[in-house]
Length: 320
Image (cartoon, rainbow, N blue to C red):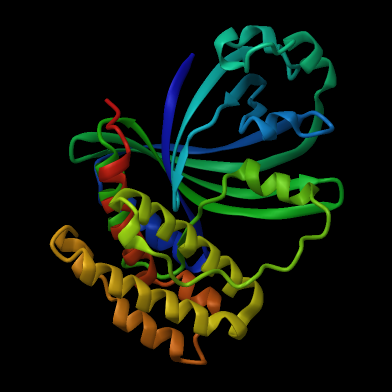
């Protein structure tokens, strides 16, 4: 079975979890009790699947197993759109021949590839689920809590995912806005698989300070917004890693965004002009505001959701 997965990820602080649950309880939904999921991720020694922007896992739940392959897609901030192929299997053993032949790059020897695959890392988490009827769509909201493990290394999992089951991408973003008054949520651009791969890397080179501007007048609007989203992610990562040293660069980036909006004031949707960019710059200037508190703040979440909504309207085709 194949489909295009469209989902939005929100990393959550412990303080935000109950507030999101309470918000979900006010919506039309079907609730599913928590289940335990185990996932094993595979790749070759030279990370061939990663090079092809593909992700392969086997998921186990209550004695049932499913093999999933995800192929190259798009990501805008925390909104992901990616083809996904799922195959039920009898045991936690790979069977690449069961996947559609057309997903592989031309000339791939699938049998040889399978013989070279190894377990890289695993995820173990508890999943709580709400199937929400929202506006004209069905959206599955899950809360995952557990860990990603590779040898002696591990990373925590504590996140909400909003996956479009039927309807419109705009409704996913509008549902996320229902949570945007809650502090402690952060739009995450990294999948569990991407975070798992990070455990395998050699010690990372320190991040360098990102650019704070680019010549948007030379680019189409859509490309400018995509580049701005990338810079936003880079500034977040740099500040979270480098603390106060990155504060000024982030403030300069937000000032650049304000200039960008002046240039596109006749093209930007009304909700973009309502984003509190000046207040966010004031918050950054406050030395008592940590990078984590800023990046997990309600105001910053609202701002990012607004820009993602603008860009997604230009970029994504609606799913039905």
